[in-house]
Image (tube, rainbow, N blue to C red):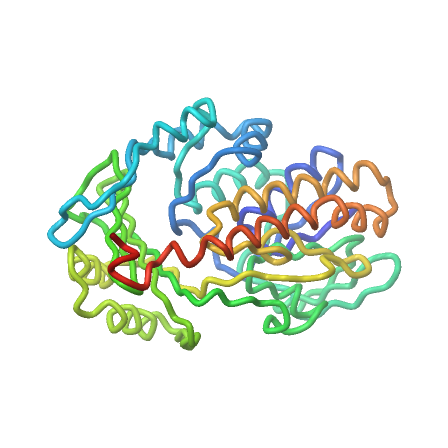
Length: 359
Protein backbone atom coordinates (compact mmCIF):
# COMPACT_ATOMS: atom_id res chain seq x y z
CA UNK A 1 0.00 0.00 0.00
CA UNK A 2 0.88 3.66 -0.39
CA UNK A 3 0.07 5.01 3.09
CA UNK A 4 -0.11 8.55 4.44
CA UNK A 5 0.34 8.93 8.20
CA UNK A 6 -0.53 12.33 9.63
CA UNK A 7 1.43 12.87 12.83
CA UNK A 8 5.06 12.24 13.83
CA UNK A 9 4.49 11.64 17.54
CA UNK A 10 4.29 8.16 19.07
CA UNK A 11 1.63 6.24 17.12
CA UNK A 12 2.61 7.52 13.66
CA UNK A 13 6.27 6.42 13.54
CA UNK A 14 5.41 3.15 15.32
CA UNK A 15 2.83 2.37 12.63
CA UNK A 16 5.33 3.35 9.94
CA UNK A 17 7.95 0.97 11.35
CA UNK A 18 5.67 -2.06 11.23
CA UNK A 19 4.17 -1.14 7.84
CA UNK A 20 7.66 -0.74 6.37
CA UNK A 21 8.57 -4.15 7.77
CA UNK A 22 5.78 -5.62 5.65
CA UNK A 23 6.87 -3.80 2.50
CA UNK A 24 4.45 -0.88 2.34
CA UNK A 25 5.35 2.66 1.21
CA UNK A 26 4.89 5.35 3.88
CA UNK A 27 4.70 9.14 3.91
CA UNK A 28 4.57 11.01 7.23
CA UNK A 29 3.28 14.58 7.41
CA UNK A 30 3.29 16.80 10.50
CA UNK A 31 2.26 20.43 10.85
CA UNK A 32 5.14 21.23 13.23
CA UNK A 33 8.18 22.75 11.48
CA UNK A 34 10.41 20.01 12.93
CA UNK A 35 10.22 16.99 15.19
CA UNK A 36 8.75 17.99 18.54
CA UNK A 37 10.72 17.07 21.66
CA UNK A 38 10.22 17.76 25.36
CA UNK A 39 6.93 17.01 27.06
CA UNK A 40 6.23 15.33 30.36
CA UNK A 41 8.01 12.27 31.73
CA UNK A 42 6.28 8.92 31.22
CA UNK A 43 6.70 5.58 32.95
CA UNK A 44 7.41 3.04 30.22
CA UNK A 45 6.79 -0.64 30.81
CA UNK A 46 4.53 -3.54 29.82
CA UNK A 47 3.56 -4.09 26.18
CA UNK A 48 4.98 -0.72 25.11
CA UNK A 49 8.37 -1.75 26.51
CA UNK A 50 8.07 -5.12 24.75
CA UNK A 51 7.36 -3.46 21.40
CA UNK A 52 10.24 -1.00 21.78
CA UNK A 53 12.52 -3.94 22.50
CA UNK A 54 11.31 -5.82 19.40
CA UNK A 55 11.99 -2.65 17.37
CA UNK A 56 15.55 -2.48 18.71
CA UNK A 57 15.00 0.82 20.53
CA UNK A 58 15.79 -0.08 24.15
CA UNK A 59 19.55 0.65 24.03
CA UNK A 60 18.77 4.21 22.88
CA UNK A 61 15.94 4.62 25.38
CA UNK A 62 18.19 3.43 28.20
CA UNK A 63 20.69 6.16 27.28
CA UNK A 64 18.09 8.95 27.47
CA UNK A 65 15.88 7.47 30.19
CA UNK A 66 15.95 7.39 33.98
CA UNK A 67 15.73 4.78 36.69
CA UNK A 68 13.98 6.72 39.45
CA UNK A 69 14.34 5.25 42.92
CA UNK A 70 11.58 7.09 44.78
CA UNK A 71 8.39 9.07 44.32
CA UNK A 72 8.42 11.67 47.11
CA UNK A 73 5.43 13.68 48.33
CA UNK A 74 6.41 16.86 50.19
CA UNK A 75 4.64 19.58 52.11
CA UNK A 76 5.47 23.19 52.89
CA UNK A 77 9.22 23.77 53.09
CA UNK A 78 9.93 20.46 51.40
CA UNK A 79 8.98 18.45 54.48
CA UNK A 80 8.33 14.79 53.49
CA UNK A 81 4.66 13.82 53.69
CA UNK A 82 4.84 10.40 52.09
CA UNK A 83 5.92 8.50 49.04
CA UNK A 84 7.07 5.09 47.92
CA UNK A 85 10.14 3.35 46.56
CA UNK A 86 10.01 2.50 42.86
CA UNK A 87 11.74 -0.81 43.62
CA UNK A 88 8.31 -2.39 43.90
CA UNK A 89 7.64 -1.56 40.22
CA UNK A 90 10.99 -3.05 39.22
CA UNK A 91 10.05 -6.26 41.00
CA UNK A 92 6.61 -6.43 39.38
CA UNK A 93 8.05 -5.82 35.89
CA UNK A 94 11.25 -7.87 36.38
CA UNK A 95 13.31 -4.72 35.82
CA UNK A 96 11.57 -3.90 32.53
CA UNK A 97 10.61 -0.40 33.65
CA UNK A 98 12.07 2.98 32.72
CA UNK A 99 11.04 6.64 32.98
CA UNK A 100 11.74 8.94 30.07
CA UNK A 101 10.54 12.19 28.49
CA UNK A 102 7.75 11.50 26.02
CA UNK A 103 9.61 13.54 23.41
CA UNK A 104 12.64 11.25 23.63
CA UNK A 105 10.46 8.23 22.90
CA UNK A 106 9.00 10.08 19.91
CA UNK A 107 12.52 10.97 18.73
CA UNK A 108 13.72 7.36 18.95
CA UNK A 109 10.67 6.09 17.05
CA UNK A 110 11.03 8.67 14.29
CA UNK A 111 14.77 8.16 13.89
CA UNK A 112 14.07 4.44 13.41
CA UNK A 113 12.11 5.19 10.21
CA UNK A 114 13.24 8.61 8.95
CA UNK A 115 15.59 7.27 6.27
CA UNK A 116 12.89 4.91 4.91
CA UNK A 117 9.86 7.22 4.74
CA UNK A 118 9.08 10.48 3.01
CA UNK A 119 8.77 12.90 5.93
CA UNK A 120 7.16 16.31 5.41
CA UNK A 121 7.21 18.83 8.26
CA UNK A 122 5.45 22.19 8.32
CA UNK A 123 2.46 20.90 6.38
CA UNK A 124 -0.87 19.17 7.11
CA UNK A 125 -3.94 17.69 5.48
CA UNK A 126 -6.30 20.42 4.31
CA UNK A 127 -8.95 18.26 2.61
CA UNK A 128 -9.76 14.58 2.05
CA UNK A 129 -11.81 13.09 -0.76
CA UNK A 130 -12.47 9.37 -0.35
CA UNK A 131 -13.48 6.71 -2.81
CA UNK A 132 -13.47 2.92 -2.55
CA UNK A 133 -9.92 2.70 -3.88
CA UNK A 134 -8.33 5.19 -1.50
CA UNK A 135 -8.29 8.88 -0.70
CA UNK A 136 -7.16 11.99 -2.53
CA UNK A 137 -5.43 14.34 -0.13
CA UNK A 138 -4.96 18.07 -0.58
CA UNK A 139 -2.26 19.53 1.63
CA UNK A 140 -2.20 22.99 3.19
CA UNK A 141 0.88 23.72 1.06
CA UNK A 142 -1.27 23.24 -2.05
CA UNK A 143 -0.06 19.85 -3.28
CA UNK A 144 -2.32 16.86 -3.94
CA UNK A 145 -1.66 13.10 -3.79
CA UNK A 146 -3.63 9.88 -3.88
CA UNK A 147 -3.08 7.25 -1.17
CA UNK A 148 -4.44 3.77 -0.64
CA UNK A 149 -4.81 4.51 3.09
CA UNK A 150 -4.75 7.63 5.27
CA UNK A 151 -4.12 7.28 9.01
CA UNK A 152 -4.67 10.12 11.48
CA UNK A 153 -2.14 9.94 14.32
CA UNK A 154 -2.00 13.62 15.29
CA UNK A 155 -3.04 13.11 18.89
CA UNK A 156 -6.06 14.36 20.76
CA UNK A 157 -6.53 17.39 18.48
CA UNK A 158 -6.57 15.34 15.27
CA UNK A 159 -7.05 17.16 11.98
CA UNK A 160 -7.82 13.89 10.17
CA UNK A 161 -10.56 13.08 12.69
CA UNK A 162 -12.09 16.52 12.25
CA UNK A 163 -12.16 16.24 8.45
CA UNK A 164 -13.51 12.69 8.38
CA UNK A 165 -15.70 12.33 11.47
CA UNK A 166 -16.55 15.85 12.64
CA UNK A 167 -15.58 18.47 15.26
CA UNK A 168 -13.55 17.51 18.31
CA UNK A 169 -16.38 18.49 20.69
CA UNK A 170 -18.34 15.44 19.55
CA UNK A 171 -15.69 13.09 20.89
CA UNK A 172 -13.88 14.90 23.70
CA UNK A 173 -14.65 13.94 27.29
CA UNK A 174 -13.14 16.61 29.53
CA UNK A 175 -12.13 15.20 32.94
CA UNK A 176 -12.01 18.49 34.83
CA UNK A 177 -8.26 19.12 34.97
CA UNK A 178 -5.57 21.03 33.08
CA UNK A 179 -1.84 20.40 33.04
CA UNK A 180 1.33 22.15 31.96
CA UNK A 181 4.81 20.74 31.38
CA UNK A 182 8.00 22.64 30.60
CA UNK A 183 11.77 22.41 30.98
CA UNK A 184 13.75 24.80 33.19
CA UNK A 185 17.49 25.10 32.43
CA UNK A 186 19.77 25.38 35.45
CA UNK A 187 17.09 24.86 38.10
CA UNK A 188 19.06 24.81 41.40
CA UNK A 189 17.12 22.11 43.27
CA UNK A 190 18.20 18.74 41.88
CA UNK A 191 17.56 15.17 42.97
CA UNK A 192 18.33 12.66 40.25
CA UNK A 193 16.85 9.73 42.17
CA UNK A 194 13.41 11.10 43.06
CA UNK A 195 10.26 12.42 41.43
CA UNK A 196 9.17 15.15 43.87
CA UNK A 197 5.52 16.21 44.18
CA UNK A 198 3.78 18.91 46.22
CA UNK A 199 0.04 19.24 46.60
CA UNK A 200 -2.50 21.77 47.77
CA UNK A 201 -6.27 21.44 47.49
CA UNK A 202 -7.06 21.61 43.78
CA UNK A 203 -3.53 21.94 42.45
CA UNK A 204 -0.33 19.96 42.30
CA UNK A 205 3.26 20.78 41.32
CA UNK A 206 6.13 18.41 40.64
CA UNK A 207 9.70 18.55 39.46
CA UNK A 208 11.96 15.96 37.93
CA UNK A 209 15.71 16.27 37.41
CA UNK A 210 16.75 15.79 33.78
CA UNK A 211 20.08 15.12 32.13
CA UNK A 212 22.10 18.17 31.10
CA UNK A 213 21.49 20.47 34.08
CA UNK A 214 17.77 20.87 33.35
CA UNK A 215 14.60 20.04 35.25
CA UNK A 216 11.07 19.27 34.18
CA UNK A 217 8.21 21.12 35.86
CA UNK A 218 4.75 19.57 35.82
CA UNK A 219 1.71 21.51 37.07
CA UNK A 220 -1.80 20.05 37.31
CA UNK A 221 -4.95 21.74 38.56
CA UNK A 222 -8.66 21.13 38.92
CA UNK A 223 -10.82 23.10 36.51
CA UNK A 224 -14.37 21.72 36.66
CA UNK A 225 -15.77 24.58 34.55
CA UNK A 226 -13.29 24.07 31.72
CA UNK A 227 -11.57 27.44 31.47
CA UNK A 228 -10.63 28.33 27.90
CA UNK A 229 -6.90 27.88 27.28
CA UNK A 230 -5.25 30.76 25.40
CA UNK A 231 -3.64 29.90 22.07
CA UNK A 232 -0.67 32.24 22.51
CA UNK A 233 2.24 31.31 24.77
CA UNK A 234 2.20 34.57 26.72
CA UNK A 235 -1.47 34.04 27.52
CA UNK A 236 -0.79 30.45 28.57
CA UNK A 237 2.02 31.52 30.89
CA UNK A 238 -0.21 34.20 32.41
CA UNK A 239 -2.94 31.61 33.08
CA UNK A 240 -0.48 29.29 34.81
CA UNK A 241 0.92 32.09 36.99
CA UNK A 242 -2.58 33.21 37.96
CA UNK A 243 -3.67 29.66 38.78
CA UNK A 244 -0.65 28.94 41.02
CA UNK A 245 -0.33 32.38 42.62
CA UNK A 246 0.28 32.05 46.34
CA UNK A 247 1.20 28.36 46.21
CA UNK A 248 3.89 27.16 48.58
CA UNK A 249 6.98 24.93 48.42
CA UNK A 250 9.11 25.69 45.33
CA UNK A 251 6.19 26.79 43.19
CA UNK A 252 7.29 30.48 42.99
CA UNK A 253 10.68 29.33 41.64
CA UNK A 254 8.99 26.95 39.18
CA UNK A 255 6.85 29.83 37.94
CA UNK A 256 9.93 32.01 37.52
CA UNK A 257 11.35 29.23 35.36
CA UNK A 258 8.48 29.75 32.92
CA UNK A 259 10.29 32.82 31.60
CA UNK A 260 13.19 30.65 30.40
CA UNK A 261 11.09 27.75 29.14
CA UNK A 262 10.91 27.34 25.37
CA UNK A 263 8.96 24.07 25.27
CA UNK A 264 5.79 24.82 27.24
CA UNK A 265 3.02 22.28 26.70
CA UNK A 266 -0.39 23.17 28.13
CA UNK A 267 -3.63 21.30 27.56
CA UNK A 268 -6.88 20.05 29.02
CA UNK A 269 -7.01 16.57 30.53
CA UNK A 270 -9.45 14.87 28.19
CA UNK A 271 -10.33 11.57 26.62
CA UNK A 272 -11.43 10.84 23.07
CA UNK A 273 -14.42 8.50 22.93
CA UNK A 274 -15.47 7.21 19.52
CA UNK A 275 -17.73 4.40 18.35
CA UNK A 276 -15.80 3.97 15.10
CA UNK A 277 -12.08 4.48 14.47
CA UNK A 278 -12.27 4.16 10.69
CA UNK A 279 -14.35 5.20 7.71
CA UNK A 280 -13.69 4.01 4.19
CA UNK A 281 -9.93 4.13 3.66
CA UNK A 282 -9.28 6.57 6.53
CA UNK A 283 -8.37 5.32 10.02
CA UNK A 284 -7.35 6.80 13.36
CA UNK A 285 -4.80 5.46 15.82
CA UNK A 286 -3.41 6.50 19.20
CA UNK A 287 -4.86 9.50 21.02
CA UNK A 288 -6.69 10.56 17.87
CA UNK A 289 -8.94 7.51 18.28
CA UNK A 290 -8.86 6.43 21.92
CA UNK A 291 -6.97 8.92 24.10
CA UNK A 292 -7.18 7.61 27.68
CA UNK A 293 -6.05 11.03 29.02
CA UNK A 294 -2.82 12.26 30.51
CA UNK A 295 -3.88 10.89 33.92
CA UNK A 296 -3.92 7.31 32.63
CA UNK A 297 -0.13 7.21 32.49
CA UNK A 298 -0.20 4.72 29.60
CA UNK A 299 -1.06 6.86 26.58
CA UNK A 300 2.27 6.33 24.79
CA UNK A 301 2.27 2.56 25.29
CA UNK A 302 -1.36 2.30 24.19
CA UNK A 303 -0.58 4.34 21.07
CA UNK A 304 2.23 1.92 20.21
CA UNK A 305 -0.03 -1.09 20.83
CA UNK A 306 -2.72 0.38 18.59
CA UNK A 307 -0.24 1.04 15.80
CA UNK A 308 1.22 -2.46 16.06
CA UNK A 309 -2.19 -4.13 15.91
CA UNK A 310 -3.31 -1.93 13.00
CA UNK A 311 -0.23 -2.86 10.96
CA UNK A 312 -0.66 -6.51 11.86
CA UNK A 313 -4.23 -6.58 10.62
CA UNK A 314 -3.08 -5.34 7.20
CA UNK A 315 -0.51 -8.10 7.15
CA UNK A 316 -3.28 -10.62 7.80
CA UNK A 317 -5.96 -9.18 5.49
CA UNK A 318 -3.81 -8.64 2.42
CA UNK A 319 -5.22 -5.91 0.21
CA UNK A 320 -8.66 -5.95 1.89
CA UNK A 321 -8.42 -2.58 3.64
CA UNK A 322 -12.01 -2.51 5.03
CA UNK A 323 -11.54 -5.97 6.57
CA UNK A 324 -8.23 -5.00 8.15
CA UNK A 325 -9.70 -1.83 9.66
CA UNK A 326 -12.74 -3.69 11.00
CA UNK A 327 -10.52 -6.34 12.60
CA UNK A 328 -8.27 -3.66 14.11
CA UNK A 329 -11.19 -2.06 15.94
CA UNK A 330 -12.80 -5.37 16.88
CA UNK A 331 -9.58 -6.62 18.46
CA UNK A 332 -8.82 -3.47 20.48
CA UNK A 333 -12.05 -1.62 21.25
CA UNK A 334 -12.99 -3.30 24.55
CA UNK A 335 -9.38 -3.18 25.76
CA UNK A 336 -9.00 0.56 25.09
CA UNK A 337 -12.41 1.28 26.62
CA UNK A 338 -11.35 -0.48 29.83
CA UNK A 339 -8.21 1.66 30.01
CA UNK A 340 -10.32 4.80 29.60
CA UNK A 341 -12.70 3.74 32.37
CA UNK A 342 -9.78 3.04 34.70
CA UNK A 343 -8.39 6.54 34.05
CA UNK A 344 -11.75 8.15 34.88
CA UNK A 345 -11.87 6.29 38.21
CA UNK A 346 -8.31 7.32 39.08
CA UNK A 347 -8.68 11.00 38.17
CA UNK A 348 -10.18 12.25 41.50
CA UNK A 349 -7.20 10.85 43.43
CA UNK A 350 -4.66 12.57 41.21
CA UNK A 351 -5.29 16.15 42.31
CA UNK A 352 -6.93 16.13 45.73
CA UNK A 353 -9.55 18.73 46.60
CA UNK A 354 -9.14 18.84 50.41
CA UNK A 355 -6.35 18.90 53.00
CA UNK A 356 -7.75 15.70 54.51
CA UNK A 357 -7.44 14.03 51.14
CA UNK A 358 -3.84 15.16 50.80
CA UNK A 359 -3.01 13.82 54.25
